[in-house]
Structure formats: structure tokens, C-alpha cells
Image (cartoon, rainbow, N blue to C red; front, side, top):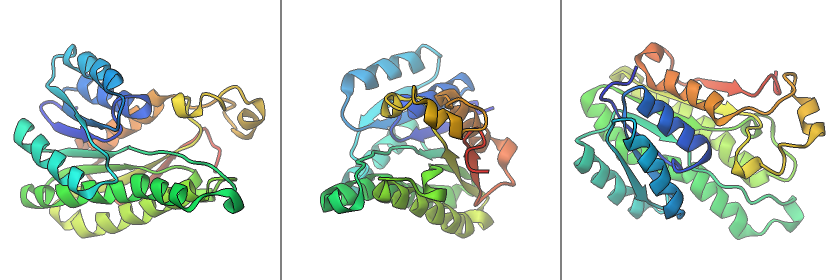
Length: 244
């Protein structure tokens, strides 16, 4: 589905991001992924991708730093010769109720989750404009659709991603570029491992289970492929029915 396409995935060393990288590689894409700090995990993921017979490289980058993002995007394009797919998956949480949430914790979550996606899009936008093709997939959340207790910063960042997605989709639609968002519900990753055994949470989900990174990766593959060429500005929930 993605043979010889070039994909950039932020937050790609583990969890949902790594699952997306592997799914893309399984379908023929060459993958450049960004990671924040865990070099060992990044090297492990890179090795797995290379074993699939595609080109793969890991780039350490803080997506909340606009200058770092500009440099790494320039380097990726030089290394890979272009880009066809951008997945903005990098995200962090720093949960607290409003009275106890520190201002830097609010800012850092918005800077990474929302502004980081904007910085990446800003760098790749001209490339997609010029080649009149491209796929952007932003990782939002059901928290951005309905809010979540103790997550004002995270929910605000993920709601902001929805507005960013729709605006970018309108700007690029006439150039044949699609921009969509995925809104996962509860997914079993390192970030949620403490929640995955919470039966009260599972009871809120009609399908009575958490999602898997592979569930999200399957949707990302569809949105990155030519099978979704007439879909843009959409936010697709993948939450076991949690928000319906």
C-alpha cells in the first residue's frame, strides 16, 4: 500500500508511534522517525524496521523546539530524498486538577502535543504544496472531543489538534494533500499501563476492552494510503464505542 513512500513519524520509538512505523514498513514505506530521549528504544525500533527490508532512520528531536524541528526535517529530506507522509504522534501527559496544575506543566503539554505538530507541518507544508500530494495524520484523542478529568492541558492540546487538522486540510485540499486526525480512546501502552487493569474504565467502553497500538496503526495506514484520497479534515474516533 505504501511501496517506496517516505514517511515521517514523530514519537516513533515506542507505543502507538512504533506500531505505526512497523505497519508502514510492513507495507513498503521507508520510515524516518523522531524520538525524544530513549536512544536504546529508538535503536531497537530502527533495527526492527531495517529487518523488514526498508530504509529506516531515527532522529532525536524535541518537537516543542521549532529550531530543532526545522533542522531535523531538513536532514530527513536530505537523507531520504523527500517525504510523502507525516504522522504527528509525539505526545506527553502531565495530569493534575486545575488548582494543583503548575503553569509549566500546562505549557509543556501544549508545546509538545499541539505546537510540536504545527512546527512539523510548517516544515513539510511547502514540500507537499510543491509536489501536489501528501498525507498528514495528526494524533488527537477522545479527550480532545469530550474532555477528561484532571487533563485540562492534555485535552486542550488534543482539541487544538482537531482545529489545526481542519484548518490545514482546507488550506491544502486544492493541492491534493489530505490532513486528518485520529482520536484514540484508551489504548494499552506504557503511558496507560497503570490504567489497563482498571475494570471501572473498561466498563465505560461498550467493547469492554482497551485498544491496542496495532488498532491505531491500521487506521493510520489507511489514512496514509491512496485508499483515503478523498478524505480530508476528518476526525476518526477509534475508541471501542466510548464516545458514541
